[in-house]
Length: 275
Image (cartoon, rainbow, N blue to C red; front, side, top):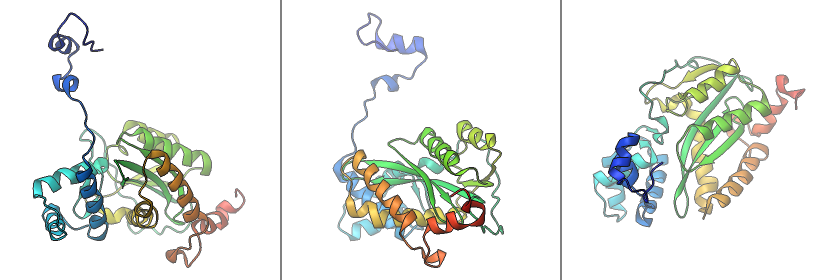
């Protein structure tokens, strides 16, 4: 819409189009290597100490030799979406105009596949840059039903992951997410309502409400992401595809008495015929 070569000055074009001047003049710059290194380390520290706020993380980083102030830690945490006590990319930053749904899983016995699905987003560091990973997880079997990568936190990649899971595995009785703007968006909610799925959302700041997905992030990062340090998006997609196959098909799960997620998901009576 904005034409720098037009005879009208940019300020006039912006005013006519009712746009912000900053949206025209701003040019995004890549994240410095030094910040990417710090973000990677902050991510590791946060997985180990989810209760650590900006002051504690600053002190931990300083003890490791990093010269950093609290304001810089806060800036990086916001960029990653990390907050003390529960980890969120700006993913869990709710939209004030979106409806918030009640948490439906308290005291609920989740005993069979497709009874409850959970979904969340996490930050993934690469050698240069970072991505966001969205996953749909079956609560009872811990099986990863679908996943998507994105370099921005829009709702579309979450909707795509949800639609794939629904197309391949039917529908759950309940979908549980956090209160992130992606999950309260009209597109995401409409997809759930079209399939008559009950909507459950974590309480504000209650990361334990979606604890199985939180545990999955630590598993994926320590067993795959940190070990390989992807160079680019293509490497990340290939590496994660291989790991998800291993996780679902061959990795024994202690919470499942040593069985794999695939074994639990596909041998449960409601799914055995479909499998």
